[in-house]
Image 1 (tube, rainbow, N blue to C red):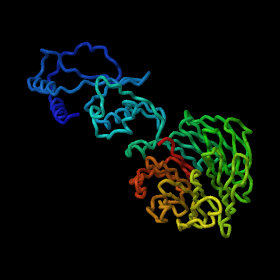
Image 2 (cartoon, one colour; image 1 turned 30 degrees about the vertical axis):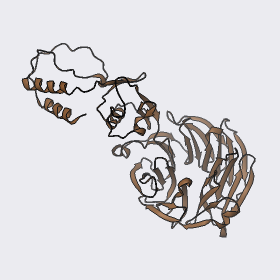
Image 3 (tube, rainbow, N blue to C red; image 1 turned 135 degrees about the vertical axis):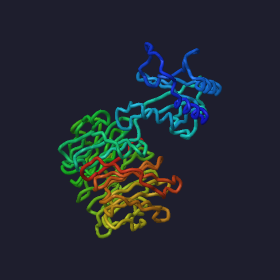
Image 4 (cartoon, rainbow, N blue to C red; image 1 turned 120 degrees about the horizontal axis):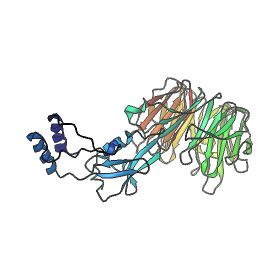
Length: 454
């Protein structure tokens, strides 16, 4: 709103005209967005100074509001002189959020204003006029899913303003009699795979209250890691029972396609993907000190790397397009290189003072995030081996990192029962990072987390 109009409105509010005789109220819409005062009728009992101010307001010749419609829900007036930030705030405060991440966003010319414009721009500056179609659409985004030793799965809205982020109450998707150990979620189909401490695997809905869709049985011990290829309706799980299992998600119960067995001790982490030729590959790491590359289509072992002294390997991440791999070990080292014989000559980083439990990489930028038993996250430059930043705040070991490299949002879950959200401040260097919020909703260790649609 222009400064001169705000000043005049402030003066109007300070004026207190004498009370008038009550009249029968006119029928009007009950929507608060449509209640607009149009001023007194000509000849009414109004102080001279108020009439003078109203005349000045009319001389400003402000543009008329544009009516927005959310189909089947409500109507809203948008003023061309208000900023994008003000419109987003009004949409956020409209009270139409039925679940975390379920928000209303304005769309102009097929583009979302919250993603393509500056918050300080006015709607007129971005092209809004009485002849322009400005729509409001409902989207599901900005979610974080977390699983805990308290046997619950929570959904968080991580797109909230900083003032509301930490104060929110998470939505409970699951609260049962089994400990949640691993999860994998997808926004488009609103589905969630959950691995439990007893070896069970369940497919649940992200809508509603986490409704159970399918249950799978094939492991005899805790499911430690899940890699889902949602477009193929295939998932691969790792377990303390030393095996990997490939699942057909279209089946129920006995949806096991094949079992991959070579490790002699518990498998901690897997990374899977599809190559440009359509080959389904997976990499696994284990307490036995081995890193194995599999052809998950037929179960063949493509390569086996064994660490010196059989040092347990706890975390792994792979870029299947470039065949690059990084893995973290119990002795605090991180090694990275290319799959195959070159793994023996992989570069080593003295990363943590305790076990390295989780890794996340941006291979195009040569950046790696690591978390471990020393309670800190670290950001590495893989091209030089330099430590770019150390992120402290957790009080106990960090189990899982989830990163959206496009937005710079990082989530870390810890044995201290919290999830910390971090923002990579320099998208070019991906070095500087600051904590933007701490989520407290679980009562025990948060073993897994994943950002969805951020």
